Image: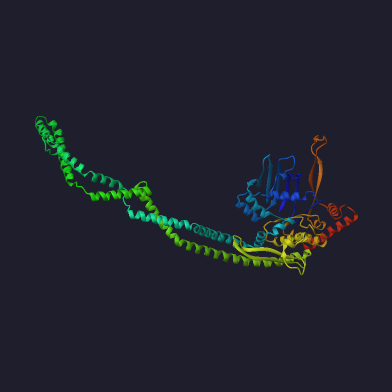
Amino acid sequence: MLLCLRIENFALIDQLELEFGAGLNVLTGETGAGKSIILDAIDAALGGKVSSRVIRTGTNRALVEATFTYSPSLAAWLNEQEIDLIDDNSLVISREITVTTSNIRSRSRVNGVLVNRQLMGGLRDRLVEITAQGQTVQVGQSAQVRDWLDMYGGNSSVQQRQLITTVFSNYQQAHLILEKRRTSERERLQQLDLLTYQVQELGAVNLDDPQELEQLLQERERLNHVVDLQQMSYKLYQALYENDNETPAAADLLGDSEATLTDMVEYDVQLQPLLDMVKDAQAVIMEVGRQINAYGDSLEADPQRLEEAEERIRELKQVCRKYGPTLTEAIAYYQRIQAELAQLNDSEQSIESLEQQEQACLAKLTQACQKLTQLRRQAANNLESRLISELKPLAMEKVQFQVEIVPTVPTATGADKVTFMFSPNPGEPLQPLTEIASGGEMSRFLLALKACFSQIDAAETLVFDEIDVGVSGRVAQAIAEKLHQLSQNNQVLCVTHQPLVAAMADRHFRVDKQIITQGKGKKANNGNAEQRTVVRVTSLDNLTTRRDELAQLAGGKSATEAIAFAESLLSQAANHRHRNN
């Protein structure tokens, strides 16, 4: 429940503090007096859209602060949002709006804690519901009407709709994956053809050893120089081991050196290590000579093998040019495209699998939507009978009302288009509400709709902005009684021009404009004291002031007849409250 509203520099309001109470709170005043500004301030405090025009001329900062009581369920929600509660069971919501030369900024706080717009939206839904005749646009929007119907359906409808949101997301994902696969199928087939060719080409080359090309190049060099290697081997053998000419071989020289050192050791044993080294050197040289001789004998020309090596080298170099540049990289590429080809081949059957997955998801979505449609039809039947019963006391005894539910393509909100169908007069066909209802009929419809939702709506404070526009007489009295009925379970704030409605109020406020002189000695450009228009609100706490205000609403002046009429209204309202309490 809204306890207090404090406003600074908001539109025409310089300073204002209002205290509201339980039951029906009414704001009256002449047209243009500023009644709607107060409701705009409440909307702004709860995160509504604002512009620089809401800041009072001559200032750059506006502040709106609203104090509410909170219920245990709201306290639990606030605790989840990590917002501390105030000990006196009050919830203070404030919004500061500042304007600079380039932009407008606002900050919202809950019990002093800065909060974002998303949290304010959740809090607003739990505190206040604002209804105005301007909601005609919403009544004509299928999405909004559908949301209202699901809310009226209760937890079962809300939970089923949440399930559909999840199921639809799964279906959408399956559909997108399938469409992506279908779109890329041509590219997949082209890639499949290319990789198949490359795998076959590389597979035919038998790529196993990354060092094969280097080894073949070495073998080609050996085969191309067999004669040279034979000659050099024989020459080296002679130089090391056995020389055919008179020049001694290295082994012979080492043998002579060994004999000399052997004689020297007999005289000096310190030379024994050198003798051992010469012996080792002679053994090594002789072994090298024998092996080089065997190597030379093993060499023979092999033109066929040379041709085979040349052909293999050309083949491997061609592979390197296409898939390398090195043989190691070509082999790695071959291994990679084998895996890619296997994956692409698996995808041939994956389209069928994806189609089956999409159909399975669609079947689940369709089934979930059908269940929600059934729940909506049940809620629609209940709403139809309830709304008609709420409209009848509002001088609409013969009204017809129907919630039309038409199948549509499944979405995240179900598979239904919902429209409010309406006929105020017997014999006239049902038509969309927004196309046929007059202003007065729309006012009564919105009030009756709010009465239907009052028991399930989380908001404890209901705000009606001129809900009685376009009605008078018996209809105005019926609206007054309906507002009083709503105020038994909810706090109701109502802006009205109807004395019949105002008379029913538990708390009555008069709103008017006043012209004040701003600041002593302050002059306007013309040299006169500067004057400003401000909105003032007076709480009408006694019967005399209320009577005079009602007389003003009824007759435009406090004439004897108007005062008598106002007194009768107050008496009638008191009797009605007494009968219904």
